[in-house]
Image (cartoon, rainbow, N blue to C red; front, side):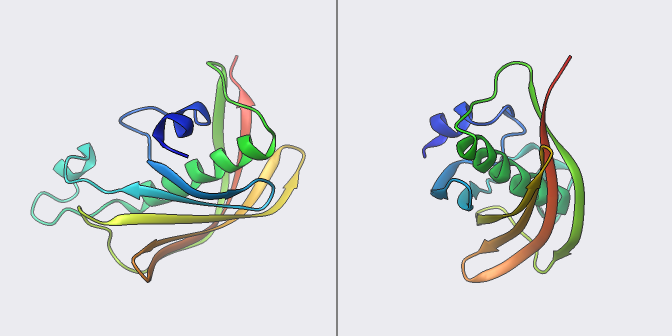
Length: 145
């Protein structure tokens, strides 16, 4: 999936869009997505000016956005202007190496469970062969009032 199809499956927009491309997608099972980390990302101005590092919470956000694409593909649905996608929980988050400008962050997300509209995912983020972050996340899609 290119960025235009990603945009059709995510409610997030610039500057908070964290998925540039989907490399693999098996609806109901797993997704592999890509985030190109550019020095022009707005968060690098303050995190940190002398040594830019992608904040761990934004790596988690990228995982959740990849998970959202997987959910919408699994449900054969697309978000509309009332769709929001929330975190319901984050467990076992670990950050192993910093992510810096120029890195390509590969996000792998696997569905672990789904009950009453809450989805649980096993997630990892890698740069090259190195795993840089891992987490189990819970998310839910809702309609905003």
